Length: 181
Image (cartoon, rainbow, N blue to C red; front, top):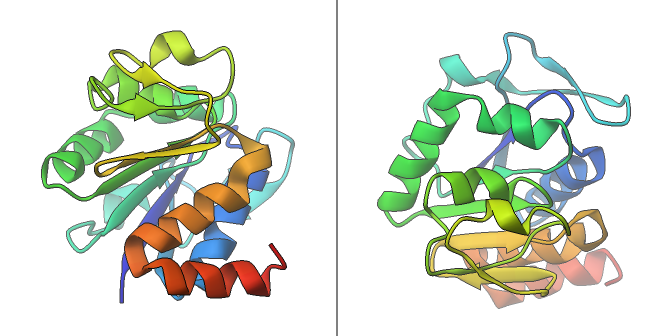
């Protein structure tokens, strides 16, 4: 079974986090919700709390197929300030595995140099933080092992793209059908 990890920091975009988790789990991808703070309960940007499955420091990421960042503010900035997460993303990216971010969160990938020479998208206004990226206005962009999404209105597109990349088009089509998309 494919394994994905999605990371929550205070101020995350709730629609993106829950939408991605839901779509991946419908696609039968083992999806673990990770808190980067010392609490399982993480408060989103609009006052909605989610309960993480695990805390970052107690988690083994060695079998991860995909690492995913929801956006939101100040969630994306909080993710970007957490050095152990950034080290994990660099190692995962360099091993050729999937790294993904939506909304403002691609700024984390941009700051790590992961987007240099790659096509990418993000929430309007954060383009300058996607260092070295070839910017597009597309809802979701796949360039090699990097997936970026524009924002909350495209969460289903983003989640279904992850299912497609991890499990194939027939699984993505099945999930989309169940969602009436």
